[in-house]
Length: 398
Image (cartoon, rainbow, N blue to C red):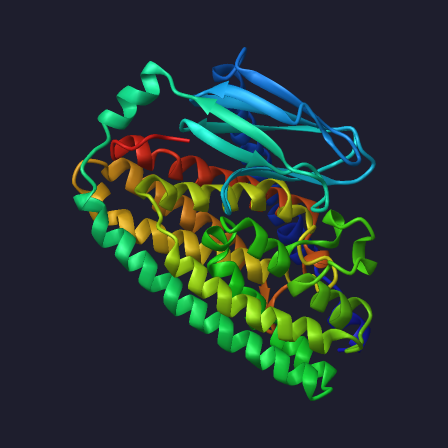
């Protein structure tokens, strides 16, 4: 048999390939319809309870807000010429956020806010922050009184703390290997070391992304800096990724990696110093999965290295850990919800496994639109299932 004929596809193989593509398209379409219906239901539930914020190049309008406690929607309209983000901060902790809002477009944040004073970020990281004052209501006070006993959550929260400690140590070690390769002047070794370091971060990203300032130094993309890749403030993983994979150069990366090493060591300390309330255990994972579905599934995150799938799989590992920690609390009276969670995890895991090759996960620029949409829809489905945990356990739901 000639080389030409051996490389050709048989009619049967072509039919199988086409059928597989059609199945994938239908699966993605079905899940997209489900996700759009869920989103429409949420919009209807929050109708009439929405505040519009316009983001301009260097400011937000309004930049001082007052809303009642409870569920509230914020429609963020990007009036600038840059992709931007908007966050609600409680001290150093991120309460809610929306990333990568494209110019001329709007996105909605549905938040469930407790009374208190918060800060809000506005577009570029260098822009001044605003304020958000949340006033108490009869419902918020009643909800606080009805809060269930925290005794049952001591075990899961303690185990998650151990998980963060272990994964934080793994991250420090992986970044140290990356730093050694860069300082040794070995581009190939540094490119190889980037992947495990990045994956180690993504396993704890839901918790790390609560720490706004520290997460920005470790994980912010070039979009959020005035001069993009050339901005002096652009550092962390994505500055290193830009040098290693876009420029294929180690120039200037040694000090960036040294700072990253110090930052991830501090990250572990901060993660262990911050307490996590029971309802935050699921909400941080939900936020991470929705970020995956709405933004990162488009290829925005690892745009220079195209190693997105490794990060997505690491995010799923982190989500699975939280589900497993809460399994004993759900097993007694919420078997149906547990089954839904396990099914959503299995579906997403199966999709990732289908995008593997002999060398690991496929580069994301080789993943077609149907597969990307399927990842987005399945991530949304898992986030929706996770949102049912807090009501099931008697906690406030976001």
